[in-house]
Image 1 (cartoon, one colour):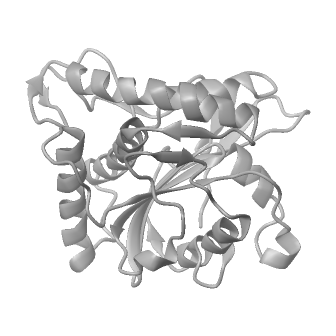
Image 2 (tube, rainbow, N blue to C red):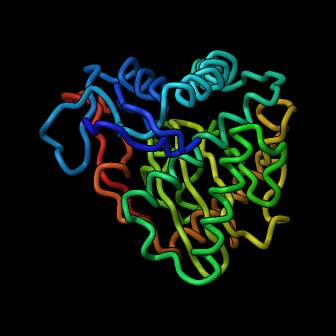
Length: 278
């Protein structure tokens, strides 16, 4: 444990006493509670059971408490009801945007701090700095807008016909059960990717074609699941200019234990989490 360090968010010097989760803890609780054996396994150590996800000395107590407030609200009003019933709808307030920005900021800030953004160069490297600053100021209530660095949400329900969409056979298992974080960049854009079970959060670092995203943007208030049309989110995910196709052409962060997804089978000894490469 370091003696003192600066909080990654507010830059106040503090003496760390506990580790901060990069992916919110409630997601791991859900994953274990709905798994066959209540354990998880991470890709690099498939034979070793794990009880928790990635943690680091990252935030001071005040910032941790601030994030926890938005996490608790999102978990109780949106996440938990949705994983129990995919027909769940709810009106949301700014807590949802705060939560989405906090998750996306953590993914990007953690990647930068751990030297995982070597593939970002030129305008995309500049965009990382700008994005972190804008998201940080928003989380610290120094600004009320995040500009073009929007957060988009794709809630997964139903079934995709993998034979016609040209995606892996296990795509539905991945979409409904996976936990994964990543940062990607291509000529056409740069983004954070945070998948919390059946919910995918895309944070825009540099993405000129904002019109590509239809009815997926998280605002300060609105209705979950964002009044999505089924064809709209499938197009965003699998279409000709969609997420999966963009992701095939991008370079992603070289995560070690922080890029993973889960697979659940009735005969498995645990929920197995392994590296997912795009």
